[in-house]
Image 1 (cartoon, rainbow, N blue to C red):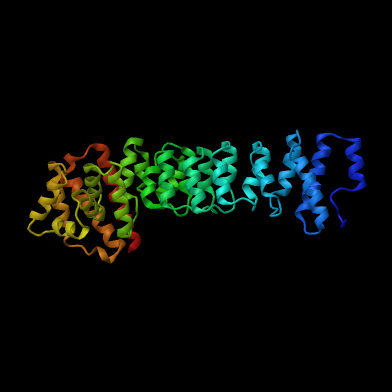
Image 2: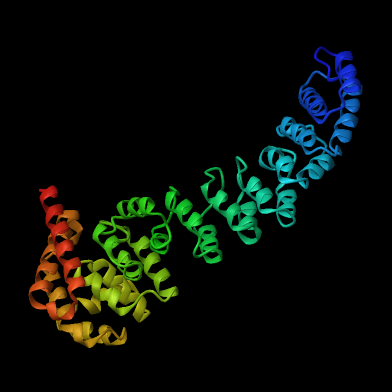
Length: 376
């Protein structure tokens, strides 16, 4: 028998003199450590397996827990024994479910459909979680496990997984917090999270996506809609904006008033993309109609999108103002446009907006002025 063998004469004598759970747990830990090493002979390994199998059936959870904890990283653990321990109580199963290299994705997917939320959370917290396993967790696991998954940076999680998780648990504060912290959160999901995350994370999300901070002071119902206006921030890529607008329409959130509020705050890109989406035409065609010098095109697409007629003159005035701007020049040009639009709306179209909206427009104008000063 090699040096550091799993059962010495002293171990045997202790077990005979002290058959307590603590003594058996110490023995389980020692045998498991030796089994996980590379120094046992073939005969010793067979003997160790027999002892481990017996300890895995011990009536005391502390014994089985010690065994699982010290075997969690062993690639030598027999598959059947690993599955037996994985179906044990959570205190025993967790070390193996979270770390054992013995399990395949198929094993873990089968297990998560038959175990407790604590077991599922251990699976979700594995150092590496494949796309298939992440899909299964989102489909079958309880909310706590899905939250662990979204906090796991070793998990392969994309927009599709985030979308399904939000659909399953739309009001989960834990899920909202986890996604708000995720480095790869797509912009289109930020609006869905604003109303369900903590105050601290809401502030972080507002800053990350350049959502006007004053919007966060409004009531939550208004916040759900108004935060969409500045969601992507300055200089967003058109594909991302198109993705956001399409998602808003899919969820019934692309309201006419949201589109008009965006334009009144100087967000011309959002307005153009939204009208293209509502009219069911390409962005290029929508821009041609919106910026038609004869204004027939603007009238036609405005009516097709069924936007409130009371706001049409304001829209005409903003589009006319846009003719003198080159938005390709960057943030300074967009800030100047936003400042001029909000000033015009507050001066000439105040009657269209209630006092709270007017305060938001005034704050939007102040931020645009500040952005111009910074650019200068």
